[in-house]
Image 1 (cartoon, rainbow, N blue to C red):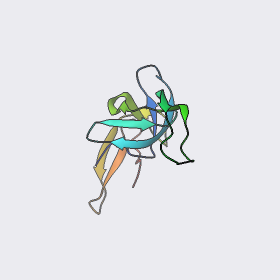
Image 2: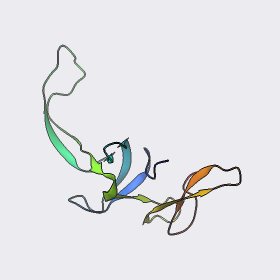
Image 3: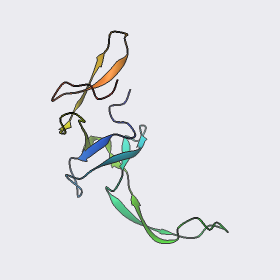
Image 4: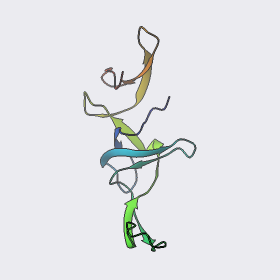
Length: 107
């Protein structure tokens, strides 16, 4: 079970975008990378491919991957950037817990 998942709100801890918050769009566990919405914007020259009209061409900006050690989960109850712990409920199901306030992040 991963500590950071798609859809979590995170805060960037280091780098050019330090302090920014955003929602995780993609998680790449093998590369230990995440893509956060609106963070680590990179410019890319995109050429048209075939007869596809939908693809955006020219110079586009898109989010680049960050190492997942550079982001911290924002706790929904206390609103602080925190580390994540795990606990088990009475049925034996594992769930994530905020290390600062002790409340469950998901059940």
